[in-house]
Length: 92
Image 1 (cartoon, rainbow, N blue to C red):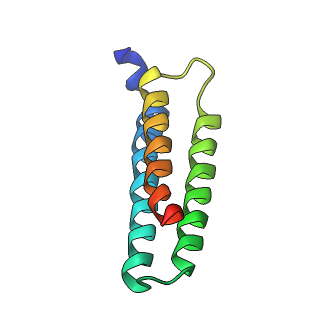
Image 2: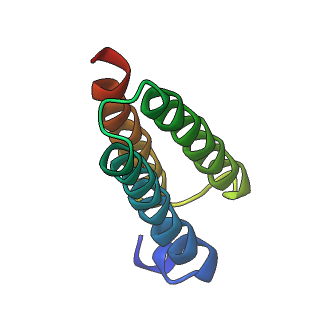
Image 3: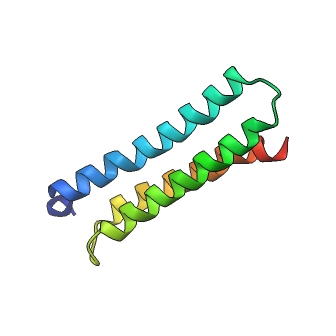
């Protein structure tokens, strides 16, 4: 497993997965701070979530078929966190 994580593609993908999550949070939170109570915030959060899911899917596609399980776990965690952070904006 150590050899798998030493590859640059794996480290970049691991880092990008959490950067995508952070960017999604920043956009959604900024929209709520700038436009509090505005219905447009829901659409902004939904658009940010769709863009983040597309970026995560692109990262997953770039992985090698025998990619590192740690990197796949990081992408899965980022995806679940994006979905979890989008729910409050969509529900209420």
